[in-house]
Length: 353
Image (cartoon, rainbow, N blue to C red; front, top):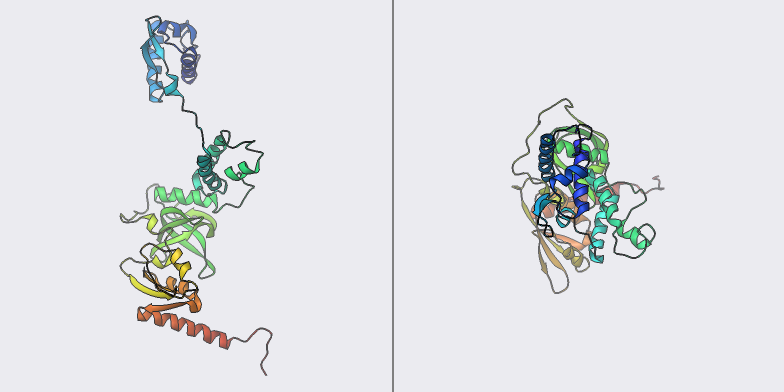
């Protein structure tokens, strides 16, 4: 019995029972399956091994059953093929189109730590493509499954794996991060609370230990390697707050960053030239009132007025802040400062006498 490993013996048994397609008695199994016809082993030893093997197969989810043979009336063991084999996957064109999204997601590296597994799964499904022609040869299939040509990943896979691991094990990390607002790279030390994907990018939400608050980091703006602050630590280094929800931080517009308790209701009027564009892309909680001339008024609750200020300024003369008065004054002060700066800056190529 020791001459054949258990794993091989199990495979031999499964292969035999699937091949015979009828109940096989223990005597036939002992005679025909390698691993049970060992002349050096005693009958009782073979019986015990067979009982252990049956239990192992059932633990693995292989449905070995003891049933009666209808033709002979004798009992034996079978593995029902309909319970053992998965049903054949037949994809419709609509289902294949849905898989194309998964294919693009995988080939662009956007699936993060599971990219390799997802990429392998999509490649296997290509063989059952419902579209005509070779999956490797037609333009339709190349688009459908988007096998790609080495596009740049949306985030460094190593950084994404390191941050995912740190978030799962609650380990503090440090990295260098490029902040667009400051146009500078700075070192950050962060307790990673969660990872999220939104708008084509991966984000880290966590407690920034230097800035004493929850911050959101776009992972493709991390420069260099993500390192653990205490690489030898064996225990979790922080607790994630009970009320933390990654979906409340990732994919949220910047004017909703900040403390929920500090909410401000802002009303902005947009003229008819841009009102329809604003109305087509509402945020949760927005309220909109349309005027007969095509203009409209947006009411929006914000927790980070500075971010909404920058957004509103982007509409120029097409937007007017109605309330609150202090926000209206901030917009006006910003515009005055911008105008003053432009007045004082000499035009390029001009000199003064």
